[in-house]
Image (cartoon, rainbow, N blue to C red):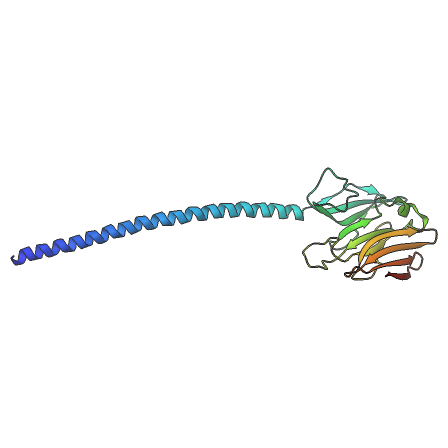
Length: 236
Protein backbone atom coordinates (compact mmCIF):
# COMPACT_ATOMS: atom_id res chain seq x y z
CA UNK A 1 0.00 0.00 0.00
CA UNK A 2 1.52 3.27 -1.11
CA UNK A 3 1.40 6.54 0.77
CA UNK A 4 -1.62 7.83 -1.15
CA UNK A 5 -3.70 4.75 -0.26
CA UNK A 6 -2.70 5.12 3.40
CA UNK A 7 -3.68 8.77 3.37
CA UNK A 8 -7.04 7.99 1.74
CA UNK A 9 -7.71 5.31 4.35
CA UNK A 10 -6.85 7.77 7.09
CA UNK A 11 -9.22 10.37 5.64
CA UNK A 12 -12.04 7.80 5.44
CA UNK A 13 -11.49 6.87 9.07
CA UNK A 14 -11.60 10.52 10.09
CA UNK A 15 -14.79 11.04 8.06
CA UNK A 16 -16.31 7.98 9.69
CA UNK A 17 -15.48 9.22 13.15
CA UNK A 18 -16.86 12.70 12.34
CA UNK A 19 -20.02 11.16 10.93
CA UNK A 20 -20.47 9.03 14.04
CA UNK A 21 -19.91 12.04 16.25
CA UNK A 22 -22.41 14.01 14.15
CA UNK A 23 -25.00 11.26 14.46
CA UNK A 24 -24.47 11.09 18.23
CA UNK A 25 -24.72 14.88 18.54
CA UNK A 26 -27.91 14.96 16.45
CA UNK A 27 -29.40 12.16 18.54
CA UNK A 28 -28.54 13.96 21.77
CA UNK A 29 -29.95 17.22 20.40
CA UNK A 30 -33.20 15.57 19.39
CA UNK A 31 -33.48 13.65 22.67
CA UNK A 32 -32.60 16.75 24.68
CA UNK A 33 -35.14 18.80 22.74
CA UNK A 34 -37.85 16.24 23.49
CA UNK A 35 -36.96 16.30 27.17
CA UNK A 36 -36.92 20.13 27.17
CA UNK A 37 -40.33 20.35 25.48
CA UNK A 38 -41.71 17.79 27.91
CA UNK A 39 -40.46 19.78 30.88
CA UNK A 40 -41.88 22.97 29.34
CA UNK A 41 -45.24 21.28 28.83
CA UNK A 42 -45.50 20.12 32.42
CA UNK A 43 -44.21 23.44 33.72
CA UNK A 44 -46.77 25.21 31.57
CA UNK A 45 -49.49 23.01 33.02
CA UNK A 46 -48.26 23.70 36.55
CA UNK A 47 -48.00 27.41 35.77
CA UNK A 48 -51.51 27.49 34.32
CA UNK A 49 -52.88 25.65 37.32
CA UNK A 50 -50.92 27.95 39.61
CA UNK A 51 -52.29 31.03 37.82
CA UNK A 52 -55.82 29.68 38.14
CA UNK A 53 -55.28 29.01 41.84
CA UNK A 54 -53.70 32.43 42.33
CA UNK A 55 -56.63 34.11 40.58
CA UNK A 56 -59.06 32.16 42.76
CA UNK A 57 -57.14 33.09 45.92
CA UNK A 58 -56.97 36.71 44.75
CA UNK A 59 -60.71 36.74 44.03
CA UNK A 60 -61.50 35.19 47.41
CA UNK A 61 -59.21 37.69 49.12
CA UNK A 62 -60.83 40.58 47.24
CA UNK A 63 -64.25 39.36 48.37
CA UNK A 64 -63.02 39.11 51.97
CA UNK A 65 -61.61 42.65 51.77
CA UNK A 66 -64.63 44.21 50.04
CA UNK A 67 -66.34 47.02 51.95
CA UNK A 68 -70.09 47.50 51.55
CA UNK A 69 -72.89 49.23 53.41
CA UNK A 70 -76.04 47.83 54.99
CA UNK A 71 -79.53 49.25 55.05
CA UNK A 72 -79.89 52.59 56.81
CA UNK A 73 -82.13 52.81 59.86
CA UNK A 74 -83.16 55.53 62.29
CA UNK A 75 -82.17 55.71 65.95
CA UNK A 76 -85.37 56.24 67.90
CA UNK A 77 -86.02 59.64 69.45
CA UNK A 78 -83.08 61.22 67.63
CA UNK A 79 -82.28 62.91 64.28
CA UNK A 80 -79.63 60.32 63.46
CA UNK A 81 -79.51 57.78 60.66
CA UNK A 82 -77.12 54.88 61.17
CA UNK A 83 -75.58 52.85 58.35
CA UNK A 84 -73.74 49.59 59.13
CA UNK A 85 -70.37 49.10 57.39
CA UNK A 86 -69.53 45.52 56.45
CA UNK A 87 -66.39 43.83 55.17
CA UNK A 88 -66.55 40.60 53.19
CA UNK A 89 -68.89 38.97 50.72
CA UNK A 90 -72.30 40.58 50.43
CA UNK A 91 -75.22 38.26 51.06
CA UNK A 92 -78.40 39.77 49.65
CA UNK A 93 -80.58 37.16 51.38
CA UNK A 94 -79.97 38.53 54.86
CA UNK A 95 -81.00 41.65 56.71
CA UNK A 96 -77.99 43.96 56.48
CA UNK A 97 -79.08 46.00 59.50
CA UNK A 98 -79.16 43.26 62.08
CA UNK A 99 -76.97 40.32 61.06
CA UNK A 100 -73.78 40.45 63.10
CA UNK A 101 -72.67 36.81 63.01
CA UNK A 102 -72.41 35.23 59.57
CA UNK A 103 -69.94 33.26 57.50
CA UNK A 104 -69.43 35.74 54.66
CA UNK A 105 -68.93 39.18 56.19
CA UNK A 106 -68.13 41.11 59.33
CA UNK A 107 -69.70 44.27 60.76
CA UNK A 108 -66.70 46.58 61.15
CA UNK A 109 -68.16 50.01 61.91
CA UNK A 110 -71.16 52.36 61.81
CA UNK A 111 -71.78 55.62 59.97
CA UNK A 112 -73.81 58.18 61.93
CA UNK A 113 -75.55 60.81 59.81
CA UNK A 114 -77.53 63.76 61.15
CA UNK A 115 -80.57 64.07 58.88
CA UNK A 116 -81.15 67.68 59.98
CA UNK A 117 -77.59 68.90 59.49
CA UNK A 118 -74.69 68.24 57.15
CA UNK A 119 -72.89 66.06 59.69
CA UNK A 120 -71.54 62.54 59.49
CA UNK A 121 -68.99 60.46 61.37
CA UNK A 122 -67.81 56.91 61.89
CA UNK A 123 -68.26 55.37 65.31
CA UNK A 124 -64.69 53.98 65.44
CA UNK A 125 -61.66 55.61 63.86
CA UNK A 126 -60.24 52.17 62.95
CA UNK A 127 -61.58 48.81 61.81
CA UNK A 128 -63.13 46.64 64.53
CA UNK A 129 -65.52 43.72 64.70
CA UNK A 130 -68.91 44.58 66.19
CA UNK A 131 -70.31 41.31 67.51
CA UNK A 132 -73.51 42.75 68.97
CA UNK A 133 -75.32 46.00 69.66
CA UNK A 134 -78.69 47.32 70.76
CA UNK A 135 -78.58 49.98 68.04
CA UNK A 136 -81.00 48.28 65.65
CA UNK A 137 -83.73 47.57 68.22
CA UNK A 138 -82.88 43.88 68.51
CA UNK A 139 -82.98 44.59 72.25
CA UNK A 140 -85.95 46.93 72.19
CA UNK A 141 -86.28 46.89 75.98
CA UNK A 142 -82.80 48.41 76.19
CA UNK A 143 -83.38 51.05 73.53
CA UNK A 144 -86.80 52.13 74.72
CA UNK A 145 -86.05 52.02 78.42
CA UNK A 146 -85.74 55.34 80.16
CA UNK A 147 -82.38 54.60 81.80
CA UNK A 148 -80.72 53.94 78.40
CA UNK A 149 -82.71 56.37 76.29
CA UNK A 150 -79.60 58.35 75.32
CA UNK A 151 -77.09 55.49 75.27
CA UNK A 152 -76.15 52.86 72.69
CA UNK A 153 -74.31 49.69 73.74
CA UNK A 154 -71.86 47.73 71.57
CA UNK A 155 -70.05 44.43 72.05
CA UNK A 156 -66.80 44.91 70.15
CA UNK A 157 -63.51 43.18 69.33
CA UNK A 158 -60.77 45.78 68.84
CA UNK A 159 -57.65 43.65 68.34
CA UNK A 160 -56.57 40.17 67.27
CA UNK A 161 -55.80 38.84 70.75
CA UNK A 162 -55.32 35.21 69.65
CA UNK A 163 -53.23 36.26 66.61
CA UNK A 164 -55.08 34.11 64.07
CA UNK A 165 -55.40 36.97 61.57
CA UNK A 166 -59.11 37.58 62.23
CA UNK A 167 -61.24 39.77 64.48
CA UNK A 168 -64.08 37.60 65.78
CA UNK A 169 -65.68 36.10 68.88
CA UNK A 170 -62.53 34.06 69.55
CA UNK A 171 -60.78 37.29 70.57
CA UNK A 172 -61.21 39.32 73.73
CA UNK A 173 -64.20 41.65 73.54
CA UNK A 174 -65.23 44.89 75.19
CA UNK A 175 -68.48 46.63 75.97
CA UNK A 176 -68.56 50.16 74.54
CA UNK A 177 -71.08 52.93 75.16
CA UNK A 178 -71.86 55.99 73.04
CA UNK A 179 -74.51 58.66 72.87
CA UNK A 180 -77.11 58.68 70.08
CA UNK A 181 -74.84 60.39 67.55
CA UNK A 182 -71.95 57.99 68.12
CA UNK A 183 -70.06 60.50 70.23
CA UNK A 184 -68.62 60.19 73.74
CA UNK A 185 -67.50 56.65 72.92
CA UNK A 186 -66.03 54.84 75.92
CA UNK A 187 -64.96 51.32 76.85
CA UNK A 188 -66.69 49.99 79.95
CA UNK A 189 -65.45 46.46 80.66
CA UNK A 190 -61.98 45.21 81.73
CA UNK A 191 -59.29 43.83 79.42
CA UNK A 192 -58.58 40.15 78.64
CA UNK A 193 -62.22 39.11 78.97
CA UNK A 194 -64.91 37.69 76.69
CA UNK A 195 -68.33 39.37 76.89
CA UNK A 196 -71.10 36.75 77.07
CA UNK A 197 -74.14 39.03 77.35
CA UNK A 198 -75.42 42.38 78.58
CA UNK A 199 -78.82 43.33 80.00
CA UNK A 200 -80.31 46.47 81.46
CA UNK A 201 -82.34 46.64 84.66
CA UNK A 202 -83.96 50.04 84.62
CA UNK A 203 -85.92 49.35 87.78
CA UNK A 204 -82.68 49.71 89.72
CA UNK A 205 -80.83 51.68 87.05
CA UNK A 206 -78.25 48.94 86.45
CA UNK A 207 -76.45 47.35 83.51
CA UNK A 208 -75.63 43.66 83.98
CA UNK A 209 -72.73 42.17 82.02
CA UNK A 210 -71.69 38.50 81.92
CA UNK A 211 -68.05 37.69 81.16
CA UNK A 212 -65.49 34.89 81.23
CA UNK A 213 -61.71 34.59 80.83
CA UNK A 214 -59.34 32.17 79.09
CA UNK A 215 -59.71 29.68 81.94
CA UNK A 216 -63.52 29.75 81.67
CA UNK A 217 -63.83 31.57 84.98
CA UNK A 218 -67.20 33.34 84.80
CA UNK A 219 -68.17 36.58 86.45
CA UNK A 220 -70.90 39.18 86.45
CA UNK A 221 -70.28 42.89 86.62
CA UNK A 222 -73.16 45.17 87.58
CA UNK A 223 -72.71 48.81 86.58
CA UNK A 224 -74.61 51.72 88.05
CA UNK A 225 -75.95 53.60 85.01
CA UNK A 226 -75.51 56.96 86.69
CA UNK A 227 -71.96 56.61 87.97
CA UNK A 228 -70.84 53.54 85.97
CA UNK A 229 -69.16 52.21 89.09
CA UNK A 230 -68.87 48.41 88.87
CA UNK A 231 -69.76 45.70 91.34
CA UNK A 232 -67.97 42.46 90.41
CA UNK A 233 -69.14 38.96 91.30
CA UNK A 234 -66.99 35.92 90.58
CA UNK A 235 -69.08 32.82 89.89
CA UNK A 236 -67.30 29.88 91.53
